[in-house]
Amino acid sequence: VLDGVLADAAAEGFAEPPWLRPRQQRLAREGVARSGRGRELRGYLDDKIFRNYISHRVLPRARVCYNRALARSPGQSGRVVLEMEVGKGEVMQARATVTGLVQPDATLTSCLTEAAWALDVPAAKMDDRVYVVRYPLRLVPPVGSTAARIDRADDDVLEVLLSQPTPRG
Image: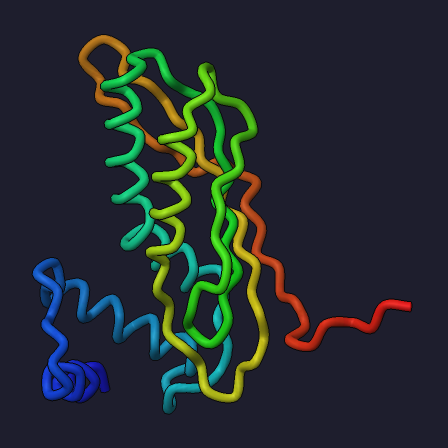
């Protein structure tokens, strides 16, 4: 399924990304298959799919942001929540909310927001839901010989919103 999509994209003038290796292609196929439950591209997205795509698309960029922040402020650490609204395979809104940084850093927050926009999930047919993904991160500075890292906090939430807003009144 994905090979045909890549061929179509190449025919339209899009270039295959340099990071797209056979492993990433396999992971993308698995994500599409899970969202469609092994049939055609339809179904729904679940937290496993979002975690997979976040770990491959968003977290590497977030690590770069954090490493740059450490160059500016070596003791930087704390918690940040990435929040993304996703519908039909597109990120409709993304933001990084600081819930506790040692030192305020607007550049880090802006960079993490850009990283959140990089989320790219398959669009499931017949699925008009809007998903709100909250992904809390712990920014852990280097200690001794250990490298800095970004850990997933344990209170992540996947909320499914109705595609139609509820009437107010």
